[in-house]
Length: 217
Ligand SMILES: C[S@@+](CC[C@H](N)C(=O)[O-])C[C@H]1O[C@@H](n2cnc3c(N)ncnc32)[C@H](O)[C@@H]1O
Image 1 (cartoon, rainbow, N blue to C red):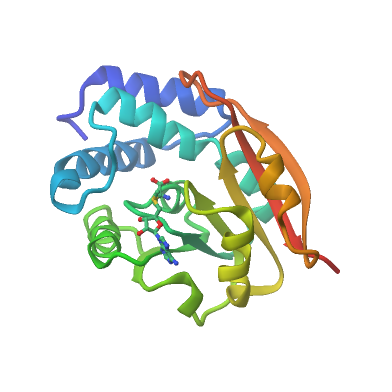
Image 2 (spheres, rainbow, N blue to C red):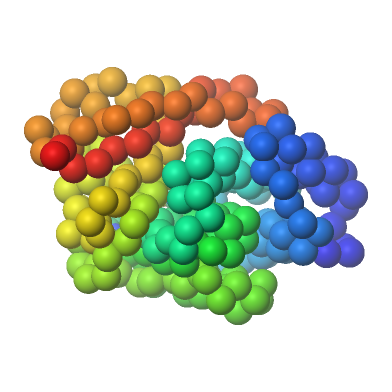
């Protein structure tokens, strides 16, 4: 993406390396193009409160990139169907689709224009493994191996509303700030948290963690 300032490209490269993510030139370009599309269409689609490109890079791109290495450890390069719930402008779903071509990503959002934006991103960035889905997650009929969310809902609501979309052996991945002990305590007995990992987002002075959940056997 030639129009993108070199400073953003350099910060993206450094941030990705710190997160253990290797990006090709094409993927780096797609991530920066996505950032530009988010900025361009933000006013129309109301996608994010963060406006400054450098801040968007840290708060959105690097924050979403922080789950790529943990996700890859889980999927081990196998073809995977992933549902990103309440994806909004496509976070983290679009970032996952760019970094992991072997993962089929569906970004579901209850707001039509947000799902339409993700569809537009899929076309503009030539991402055949990405689709935007306009629906409430409770109504999604397909099955998925991994279900993600970021800034979506309480753990109890996230897991209850999306449970019908879990394939056999599937997991939920919830991106949260500080470890949400109250939300963990409020989970129904049928859902277990089997791993909590701290995430370090380069340039972000805030706590981040990733919760792994599954139906209790
Ligand atoms: C705070 S935004 C988070 C967007 C994005 N994940 C991010 O991190 O920037 C929450 C999104 O969830 C969507 N949403 C709320 N309830 C939903 C539901 N039941 N099914 C699907 N999407 C829902 C909203 O429309 C909104 O776009």
